[in-house]
Image 1 (cartoon, rainbow, N blue to C red):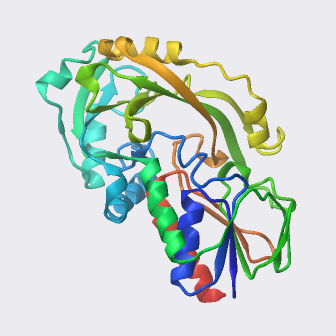
Image 2 (tube, rainbow, N blue to C red):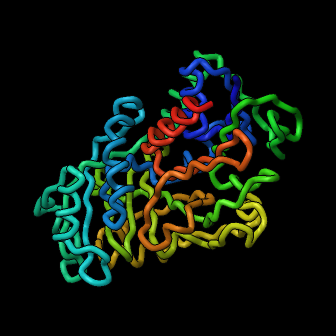
Length: 353
């Protein structure tokens, strides 16, 4: 038995390492010249601890369950030297402060009222309550270094700059080579449906903007999440020593469903990138006036992909789908610390292989 992992993001690297630990020869095929260069880098760098999903208990609970393991395993990459504040808006929020508190207790996540100084930073007419929670960030550059070291120590081959075109029984065919494979794990995130013959997965794609800013000095060691509905986040982005700025209304620039457009990354390449940060900060400053003094630096644009079935509750379950009649598995997981759910599913595949 041998395996091919398609995609050298965080999930692809972890899947390859896991297979190697099980004694299965494995290699990685990566379309670019680098690992962890797309969605694994361009995101909020949040180590989810469940708070983000009060309307999807399963997603929240799995994040709460998995985050301690991620923190232990990747401790050098975890940044915990900041205070994270969650604020609940008064109008148009899909949860109340009381409901949010109950939810946090139900998933056994730490929560307490924010200090008076921090509460005073928010507009009391628009914010019902402010809480201090335990939720950290990660440095994607250090995470990449850790994974590269492990892959090198295990001598796992990585084939860069190769695009997988199709699967056939027992074989992966790229634009440069053919590779025999007993098992194939497609971890290409937004490109999951780009390989010829892939069964429809009913995905939703968005071109998204992560704005990077210098926040006012008082906020340099602060993370902010305002929710739930008209929400935004201002999170430490350790890889660039800045803060990411995202807004539920302005971060998505365009969206479409499976089959409605050409390849997602092709759409991104052709997109005329113009920052919406002025709109983000103008709206966020209504809730937290201090944010108006944030200094815009630049933006990263990337494709974000989720399952269409989670439009209503914002849940982010793991997609683990087998190609009909083949030992080929498509994997989509949007939360970095939920990788361990994927590894459990792979163990089940190996038992039956």
